[in-house]
Every structure is written in structure tokens, then in C-alpha cells.
Amino acid sequence: MRWFVLLFFAIPSANAGSITPSFTTGQMESSSSSKTIIVETIVTENYRTGYTYSMHGTNVQPAEGTIISPDATYTNTQTFNGVSFKWVTPDLDTKPQWEVKVPGEAFSITENFLAPGLDAVSTIQRTINTESQSTSLSIFSQ
Image 1: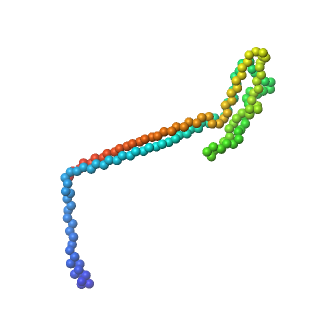
Image 2: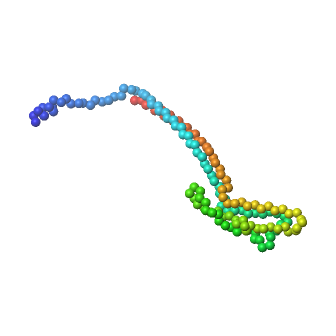
Image 3: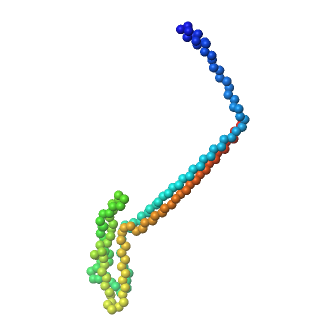
């Protein structure tokens, strides 16, 4: 134990001194830049969920016992992108039948049928370029 106490006194002590910077002025500058490129494709699908049946004509009339509007029926189940659906569509076997009002006279008839389903597809492809730059300057003195 005596040697330990003697050894303790034999170790020199360390003294901390003050630290004084050796500069008087200075500056620091930092710069950064980034560039982002986004390429995207946007697809829009428009669906007609019902149907349209129309007729236009001259010197024509519905045939005896014919109804003006065809019966509605459902299509078979369809699945697109995991979504199942059925369309309402006319039963074309029950569409109106037309006859000439005054035989021998001029007549015209136009029937239009617009079925349900995919009506239009729009595809937009675009690229978005974004660039940014930043510069920071710090000036300091003592």
C-alpha cells in the first residue's frame, strides 16, 4: 500500500490551457444541386354504363303491336383489372319494328344503337424534369 501512495504522487499532473483561435475572419460556402426526372403514363378509360337506342325517319310508324323501347337485359359478367361488372343492354330481338305509313310514298329510316362498354381510352405520356440549386455563404469574424 505504501508503494501505491508513493506511485500516486510520482505521476505528473496535466493542466488544461486556454484555446485561442488563430484566425480573425473567414467564410464558408456550400453548394448543392439536385435533378429529378419523373416519367409517367396516365391511362384514362371512359365507360358507357347504359345504352341508347334512337330512330329517326319520315313516312314510317311502329308496326302493329310493337313497343317503342326495347327490353333491357344484362350482358354476361366481365372482369377487368379485378373488377367484375355487367352492362345493361337492349334485347335487340325486342327492338321496335317499323312500317311505311303511306305505301308508294318516299320514306326514310335511321336506327342508332349505342351499346354499353368501353367508350374511349386516353393515354397521356409526360416527362417532368425538376432541377434545383442552392448556395449558402457564411462569413464570420472574431
